[in-house]
Image 1 (cartoon, helix red, strand yellow):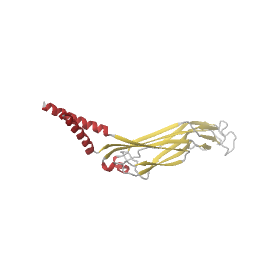
Image 2: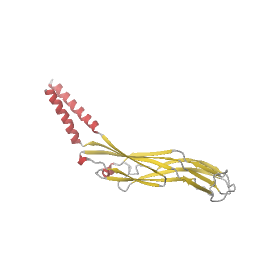
Image 3: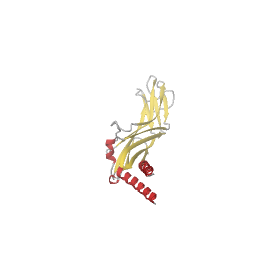
Image 4: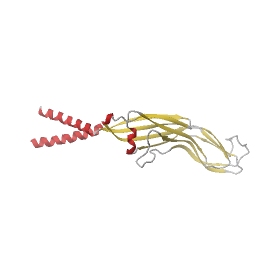
Length: 234
């Protein structure tokens, strides 16, 4: 009977340790918004991870960014004597950077790629139908209006372990979003163009995943076992 009780006690200890470990895993999420008319640069301030004097262990830092664009338009007007064709991109790009912390993944490459929220397509324009240079005419077979559609792009990833200490502290750090108007038409000669910029909006999120340090978890488990023993004795 004593052996059975002892074995049950060991099972309870392991169960408590496992439950404490699972229950103690937690995360802190911070999200900042940006928006405006490109080209724009916006600085966002985030809190560092407070490890409470070493009683919390930072497991990972996860970063994500999304970009949404809409509206605006681009006029392509062929003023050349020959027809022209090619591809166009219209929208915005966005990059995330920081002079306070390193934004590198486990391969020591930028954790986020450049976001590109674009309306893309092909165009074929006739030769100039007689309109003058500099009028950006949108009338006739020698011109095209590209209307900015709602487009989205996003990227995310975990930072490398070696840069995680840069995020630990009780202060703040800045992340900077640079969003740039994108108006490309393949470098085709003889075309003049005019742009009404898109509107760009998005967000940046930083997530800290952490657990209490092992001694704290062990104390919690031992406390649970002690309470169980007291109940059994009663």
